[in-house]
Length: 133
Length: 180
Image (tube, rainbow over all chains, first blue to last red; front, side, top):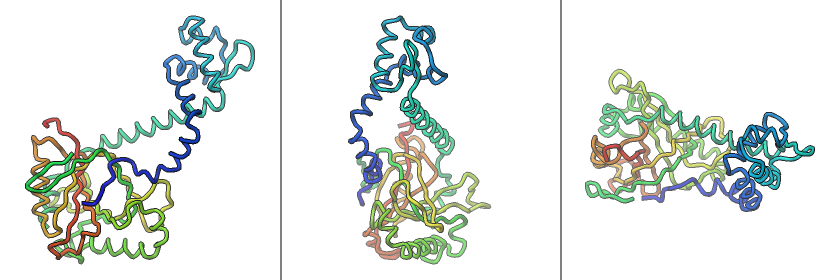
């Protein structure tokens, strides 16, 4: 029997693989920065526009020190920035990252819904005709 | 995972998604020739595909992920009933990389990501394939079909329709059944 692929074709992902290797640390830092419920919420609220520290504290529902820690991580990853004192806005990079994540998940959701709808077995009539020709 | 069914070695694969470039037929493939032969619509489909392959030889060489391997996918439409409506889709093609331009006369088919049961039989022994299919996928068995299509895969072991030594691979999309 011919060898059959058991995972995504490697060759078609080579450019992605090379890019990932090249940008590994940057991507890792972005993922780490975003991988907390409260930091993702901060990013989400900043999509609505600039927020003050106090405003974020009310929106996310965190105490001052906890919020400051999360904000620092997002600032260090350059996903948000500080246009003026105690005021924060999402960066272009931060917005692009969220767009990529949302697009990826939306496509996956569309794909899942499509395939769920298509799942069924071959009919007995088809099987009979197909194998007995 | 590997099983043996009726003396035939069967492999159950991890999920895989086939992306195939080729030609498609919709209709009753056997309306002109009532058996598996070069004269039915599937034979004509392969001829069309091979002609396009020669016309675009360099292109095929650059996009083909598995040289020497061809796929034939038989897809049952939702309105097929085998009596009044015997029309279904047949797609023949080869595995290609993502993001490529497609020749005007050809089509890209991306199949669902699913596990497959794979086994080989002589081309002249559809009865063996049917036996394995039924043994593996009958009601109450561990695996059930996931999608309504069957793939036949051809490689250098295919020696023609009438040669008893000619082999082909069967790929049946499956999922683990609730009964299993």
